[in-house]
Each structure stands twice: as C-alpha cells, then as structure tokens.
Length: 225
Image 1 (cartoon, rainbow, N blue to C red):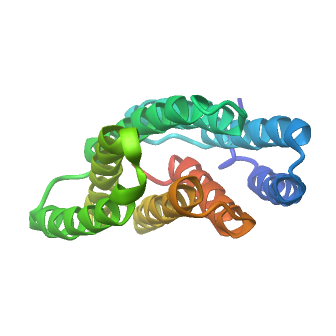
Image 2 (image 1 turned 30 degrees about the horizontal axis):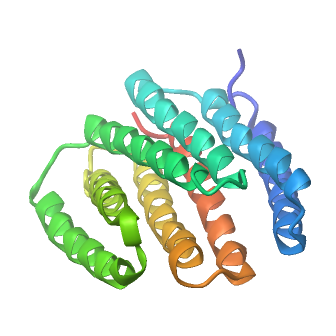
C-alpha cells in the first residue's frame, strides 16, 4: 500500500474532500436536515480514519493506539448525530474512550518531564473552571461530564508533553498539540450547545475545530517517530 509520504497529492485530495464534506455538513446542520446530516458526518469521520491509515507510520505503536482512539471518536460522531436523547450519553462514553487512547498514544511517544507537571497544573485549573461553568446545568450528568473533563484534560496534558519533548520531530509535536487544543475548544461548543444554549453558532464554530483537530492528529502519524 502506498502512503501519503509516497503520494503527496493524496493529502491534498483528502483536505479538499474534507472541506467539501464539512461545508455540506454545516449546511445540513443549519437547515436541520437530519437525513442528510448523518451520512455526511459519518463519511467525513471515516475520512480521518482513512487519513490515519494512509500516512507513513515511523512509529507503529503510535499509529495503532491513536487509531483506536480515532475509531471510538467515529462511533461518538455517529451517536451524537442520532436524534434520541440517550445517544448523547453513548457519544460521551465513546469520546471519553477515544481520549483515553489519545492520551495513551501521546505518553507512549513522549517522556514525562517537569513541563508535564506545569501543564498538568494549568490543565487541571482550566478543567475545574469548565466544570464549574457547566455544573448548574448538568443535572444527572454531573458525574459522566466530570469524568469526561478529567480524561480530556489528561489527553491535553499528554499532547503538551509531546510538544515539550525535543526528541519528537517539531512538525509532529505541533500537529499533536494543535489538534488536542482544537479538540478541547470544540468540546466547549458541544457542551454549550447541549447544556446552555442551543444555537447554530455552536456547530458553526465547533464542527470545523473538531474536524481540524481530528485530521491534524491523523496527519501526525506520518511525523511522530
């Protein structure tokens, strides 16, 4: 199988397809077209799985662990696109597991240093502030959301650890950390839409950030050794 390292045009084609699918998804979100939204979102999410598999993989362990996380996120995307209320909890659990594997992949390739502990302090403070912001609106979902915030914070700390590890190629460090930060911010818009105020602006900003994050992480497979 040829990889994107051998066929650089494939990365460009992936980006063009992703942008087109994302534009369509945003139109369907705006119009409330549920029937078109689900297949479009599923195909777009499958595309970041394909992207991961198409990259060269100088570190196979990183590929396999991150790929499992991407697959769980694909499942989360499908659950959140379904109309039933209980699907939100299934999506939350699926994304939580995805972040567990993301964090595992980051700590697999990077060495923990004092920078990790500095990032942990900042991350835990930010996560606490997010939970306090959401807590009055969570109802029976307080514990699942708290667990999710803890796990995504650990994921972000792992990405920061990669970024601060000079033993990892700089492009790989940049892709990982930028992807993790974009994912974290996109989840704030998901939370705002679910618990505070439902409006299209949440998806208009959150969906591009989310897919930007996923494709950055998928592309990082070719640069993290």
